[in-house]
Length: 234
Image (cartoon, rainbow, N blue to C red; front, top):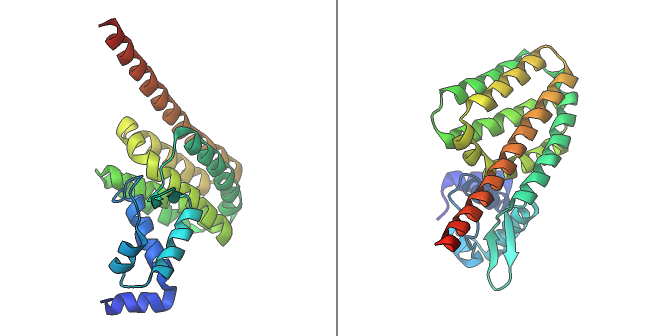
């Protein structure tokens, strides 16, 4: 049976949104890996509801790119290849840099303190999963003073989708020092109230992640090819 807290949330937010948010969190934190089937009857039983709000929640997750539909399997957690991820990062650059140019002139001391707090938590953490979450929070907080809800939602969608696949892999490869150095440089430019500099630093920061991803994929292909050559020689 739904708890009193769940009923209160449902009244305020709507059951499809509650289900969507719960499933989204599990997908983004890795509890649900790409390819896992999302059976509507099982989800309806889990959330003690009919299939209608489950279907609507899955439809919303599909629009965010987190769920896809496969023939004979129905809804499954979506996966992405390198080409798709690079396209999303190009979109992130366009959206986030535009938002930063609007946001920086609107920033007040509270915004700077909030960004600093996120980076301090990032520094104190030894968890790769937490680094991804703090990275997400920093980018969203950076754009929030643009005061454009639709723009922020678009940024959140593409930021979440790319971080879901990228951040753990990139963090394991590069650690947190490089990205954190970029973050502090961006924060300093915000304090200088220099929108153009913030946008330039942000673009460089995201492009660095994209280039690391492409390099990782290239080396993976080269290693696979080398392994095939060794087997053929044997």
